Image (cartoon, rainbow, N blue to C red):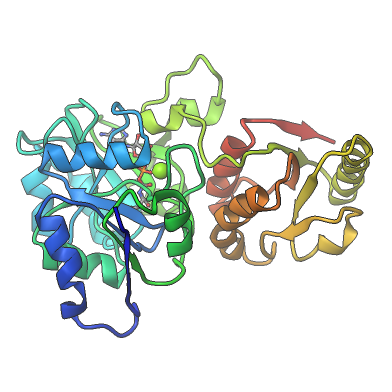
Length: 349
Ligand code: TXA
Ligand code: MG
């Protein structure tokens, strides 16, 4: 299959530019498109055959459910059997935007889309191309991140092509995304809402709207024996090919420890890389040092993380040593993704 690339300027486009993509989606085929978080691989959420194509293109286990993307508030009650008051408040506060909520599903949502679950994940994205595409196609768009299963999520069209070229009919190239980490997921099906995946919308922001929320114990404990409630969280994710280790502690000690480990691996003839920050990039004695962003702006680190993880593969890094980040606000989402990439390999110094 030839993958067409459709370039669209998110700041200046007409809906006609989305005609071909909209037609492809209507026919039950797939289109990758930008959202404000990461690129998504879209298909008709109400068509089990389209969902099956998504799983196949990504090589994704079929019990890992998809997020359904909508463009209007009215769409929510067509998909969700019950929308609690707190969910309405969160939708008012954060939609359109990087928040996904889980509801009990209505029958029209096929189990092929929800991985066999009786619940459905719904999100209203804010990216102008995503919104226009949902409207133009006239469907609800099921869209996981547009990467091959297990690889870092795509934050540029190039990343999508790296993984899915030849497997899908079209990619809409709308340039780099703004946030760079997947949406926050909140389960609204139980009495007290709980965060299943941290993201740009933080626990503090959610609690300001609806009071106390839980964090999925699987997220906090990260212990093998705690069963993750967002099925996607149990798979090894976002992983570069090399073995990644996160080093945590006082900055000077972290730098010294990383330099020691780099020396040790290099002496064995291994290809080693360091994931540093703008503030520390000059401090490492390693030929492959990449800065993920500046500690002064967490947003730049979130936006740069997946690109850096992919670059580690391009560099052929066999061992990767990374600095750690404070686990508050956006840092919680950043560390969540980094720990997964490192398969929870964390050293304290
Ligand atoms: O930012 C995003 O959310 C991006 C863009 C494209 O919108 N999408 C995304 O999709 O990250 P994906 O498939 O990579 O991650 C969806 C996550 C998975 O961890 C999945 O298990 C969880 O959402 N999920 C989906 N439906 C669920 C449900 N009914 N119950 C619990 N978890 C669910
Ligand atoms: Mg994903």
